[in-house]
Image 1 (cartoon, one colour):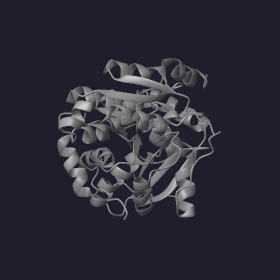
Image 2 (cartoon, rainbow, N blue to C red):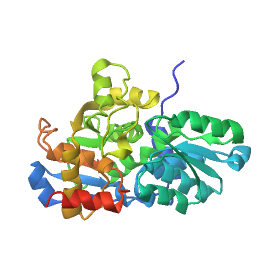
Image 3 (cartoon, rainbow, N blue to C red):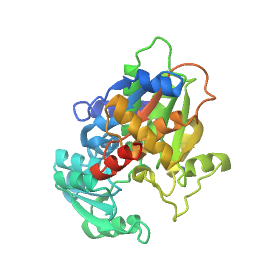
Image 4 (cartoon, rainbow, N blue to C red):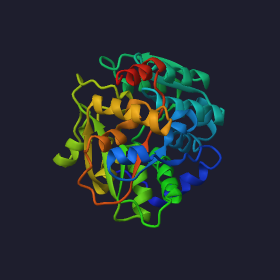
Length: 328
């Protein structure tokens, strides 16, 4: 029996629960970027979200449903950083303990964010150890509930609140012709798809992935889930999931029109453009949507404005400085 998938009603219910918890991030436009892309682009700015990324949305929607003994024993999550911070903040707000399994090479700013919310961190080697196995052992030993980073009913519904906001904030009389969003495990783009396609059924939804981690693009072509080469590397640390999830892929294949694949060089240029013209600090993995537009990966779209989701801003200052100065 296939697991249940969230619906638009579940996304709306999650949006209600998140009132007063998440920030309604702005939808911004830059004439300079419009000129570079060749069309009007509105940016959903999740780097301005509490904890610096969209991940708080899904994490809180999942954790707030735990009660009694489950809440007392707390949660364990595995993440390169943004989901880790979302879970840590949600656990602190709800008064429950949290353990986060993080790769030893996670950006220092993300590690610091988890520690600020008093969660315990267990480090692992992302290339030689299994984060899932480590989390399972902790859960077995402590009774903590495992909180996946994307392949979860309530996580997906919570991320969809971002899409609800986009439809409410849209400033033009006619709907956008397309929305483009980064894909790692697929939780955000799945939730956004449920929200936006309910309001704009003809909207084209495009994913964006870094080279070497284009499993979603290849999976859609193959008709089933495929993984990534464990030897692959990218500066987009937030998008290095081994594959899309079971739930997220079922939603993605019903909603996505295409997936764009971008290089690290294209991502670096997008990070610089966002800093220069939007005045935003966007981490590499959070900027793949803009990278795809600047790289001409979505030029076959109909004329009209598009939405690009910028998903996170938790980049180490040294890495950010190196990206910015590399253009000089």
